Image (cartoon, rainbow, N blue to C red; front, side, top):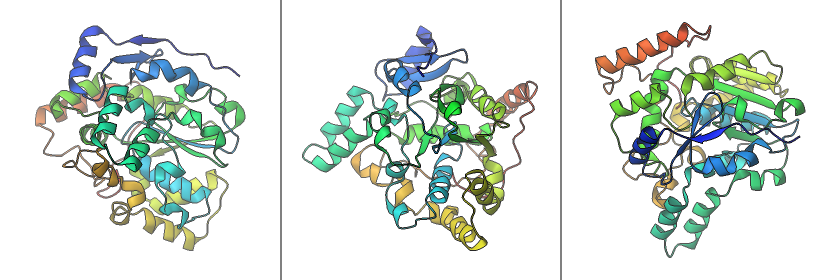
Length: 345
């Protein structure tokens, strides 16, 4: 089945220019997609058709989240469940085991050239960088089943044969007060984005939907509205960190991969923040040496703690975000749970 491509148009000139100044990694411009006006870097305009027309399989598991909503934790959990807790196999890099579908969109050709040039004389690093920029759709058909695929695309931009083929989707949502600060640090950490502006500026862009893969509320509402669909499992990040063992059991049941208590306990320990942060297969610390991550930036896996009361939030900013959340609460029955004080980001 051929997918029907949503409308893709350049972002408003003034906003576009501001985003180009703020995100040094994107050199061409920004586009908005579909009726919800999802915001993407320029490469999406050329690649959209290919993403929408990926051939899915009935035993696929797709993980869809807004960025910084517990995606990496969910990936590792799901891959382990689907692969019978293969701890030896899990030593391989997570994105090798469970590819990030649209990571190529972050690699603008000029930024890619810069990374390759910075690693002149190191063929292995150059090969790795070039490999990250290769669209996953070019090799996804060669992957062995069951495939576990990560994406930040909302449900409406996933391959259109997904529901028809019965592939399973796990959608994870996280309180936007925690997402916004974690996302800000991520975009500063990854030199593919290389965000240059202030946190206050970013918060206003986040609220207006002018961030990569935004707007936030449209994204999570799509996942929320799919929760009663048989092939969807909707999770709140706050519930996951509150009851990790219960989440493992729920995910295992959803994926038809039952686990005994001993296996659940061991996997919960593997996923605990104190171990997760030190796991080289998921924390991407080696990307700092390659130059894809800023060497003086924070880690990819942060503390996972509630950030809404962080010192980075002025009282005015906190009130702004609270009012924005309350405004959207008037339009949906989605409510974010109260978050616990530990977890994974």
